Length: 66
Image 1 (cartoon, rainbow, N blue to C red):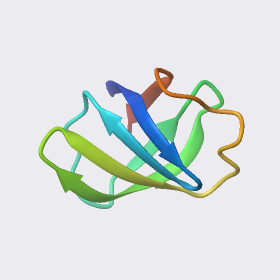
Image 2 (image 1 turned 180 degrees about the vertical axis):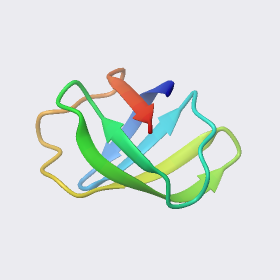
Image 3 (image 1 turned 45 degrees about the vertical axis):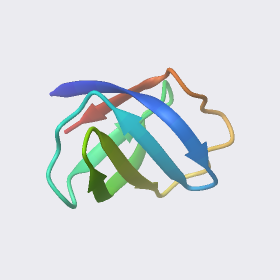
């Protein structure tokens, strides 16, 4: 499993850095390990659609590419 960090949060969309996933990979986001899916890759930034409430997560928390 590859680990990165949350860079930015905008509602249910999270931008992460430090991982190199493929499109549609499932990720665990934040300390709460929320389920998300990679929907876009822009260079070193990865855009993840989180399928749970993101109100408890913040930048710097881990992102795990499963």
